[in-house]
Length: 600
Image (cartoon, rainbow, N blue to C red; front, side):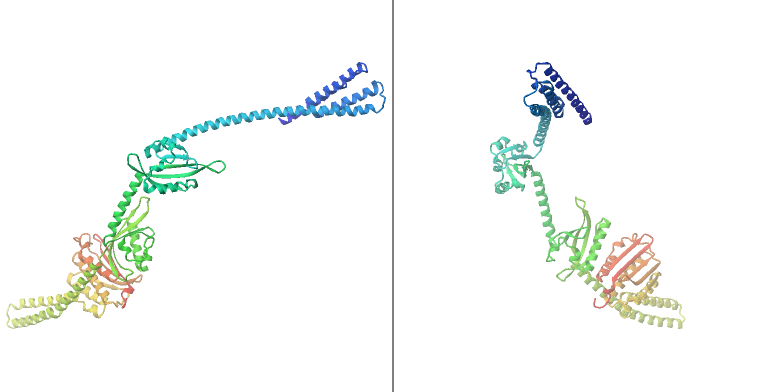
């Protein structure tokens, strides 16, 4: 397009040069044909101006020079000679200069005219665009204003806008009438009348905070009293509005009715306070941990044992590492099982006292999906002390009864046996038929003596005191085989020296209870007692091939198992019981090796 316009422009220039030259020749011809006293020099301006106007400056200059030269030729060769020979040449210079100036003026006028037309067209186009853009902006503004009013008129809260000085209410949405119970016009008339509705306890604070609205720091909650006397809670937020220069020229804000939320919060707070009072006014320990084992809640019963806040702490911050690991393992078992589990723990608190607790741990999730472990702990220190005393009394009574059976009843039966044997000898010498019956009585007395001695050894295991646990268990196994006709054997992989006598006694009693249950109730045909070490623990395992505990008439929760479990915990060990229907039972007691040494 640009190349085509340039070509047309060059063609127009060439044609105007030719036309201008033709005009000059025409003026020359007229000047030649007219008398010499008639001059047509001024007429040369016509082709010069036409060439410069339509052909451009270059075309005008060429025609101007051609007109001056042709005039020179006429003066030199046609017109009478001038008085001075140099005059024609001076005329050439003057005419060429004048014609050139006219050509420049004509071309400049044409250029200015074209530029002015272009500028007029351009400006007209720009004005049309501005008018169209303004109309579009006005339409958008009207649409935005309609949307704004529809939005502000239909929101439940109150949208407001004031000037910076707070002396003029520029806009207030209809929600003001619903929430404040006052007309919007009253606020337009008196922009500060909204403050008069604020409760006296909140008014001074809110009025002072309203002065910071320009800084964007206004976010207040307060109460208002409606004309009908009812009270509403308001959350009011304000923020500055900036113009294009970054200067604050408006203050806008939103006020919401949060009465329902505040009432709900108050109800929740009241429930939480009741819960706190309930949890803090009894002897139970209550706490909540997160998945990482950090305490998220503790009641006053637990807190009073420590001189520092417990929230955010873990069991490792409160107890020795061994105890903390055990508590952490209990939490893990609860989370994995997803059920409420019961644990019995002995824990030493900072005051130095060791307390016994039954812990009921349970998993739960909060509303956001977080997983926690809750725990209610009941102190059973006194009960355990009584149980320990009863157990010690029971052990002493068993020992006393065993001693009495061995030293008194057995000796008495031995005396009866001697008299019976004398009677048998007399009857045989007299050839009396009653001698056979007397021999049977003597055998029964002898069997009674054997059973009494076995009972005495069970109640008072002398070998346990003199030779240790394994020999006492071997003697006990022989007695079981004789009493119940059940195969009972003792296996010991490596000899273990138990320096603590009460530990050996509790292990012996655990074995005694487990084996008697298997022989009497589970109808076991084979019982194995295994003593060994594993993972820094002394391990005592009693296994049988009986019917299991599920059909033992409730023996799984009987006193015998409870006592075994208590004996295991009293020596710092654990008791694990596995039983399957018709597949026997396995009872394993594990005690840390450091617990069986003297002085531990």
